Image 1 (cartoon, one colour):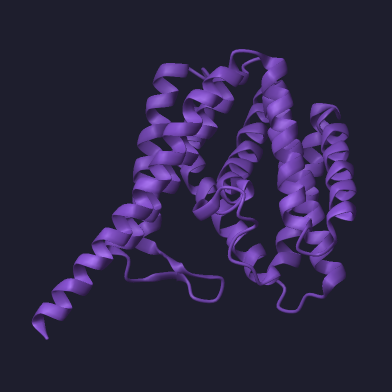
Image 2: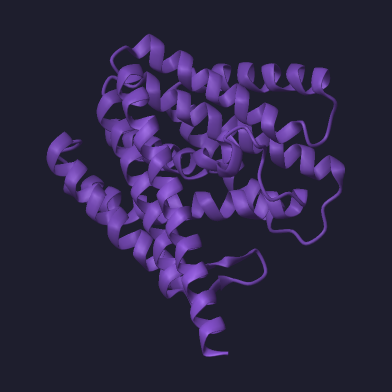
Length: 273
């Protein structure tokens, strides 16, 4: 009996280590690719547009056939491109207006197919347009850099701490696998990554903006992850797709980045206004 328990413990440790290693591997593979893309604003914008197109396709193929999904994904990508070109003030107002409505609808108990389509449409258009808007800013390298680094750090360590120390569920209703211990680990290492980025990139001379990035960005990254989990729960799926095999779909890896992009954009707009 004791030997059986020890074997189960070892199996669990191996599983946890494999999951963490796989997440780190994704970061290791994507980092040089992202670095090459960031060398040119045009290539970065093209890559961002393709990510929005893929995200929309991954989400809507659960509702429609392949050909219809393709046209919907193209339509959503065009909407995101149009939206990101609005003047700063209007872009800020749109975010501040639509996002609360999105979360109210997302947290509503009962949803029909029409509501789910609207939720998915809003998710991909708003989050996608903010990613593209971030890419178009004069300091793309700095802003996108901190979004990617903090998102990766928060995601990896939230998962690692949750698996190792997690006992108290963050939300049994919406995301039973996420824990307060995992959230704390993600916040600590996300904030550490954020601090390092603030020192290296020197994003802003405004102390308040720097403080909001330091404290708020790791939290927003985890909110983005939870938002995606709730949406998937309502869609009754585990992953958006199997594009990245055992890692799920591209959208599964972008959820915290989407949310972080919105947060950084709003701080940037408020600073320049």
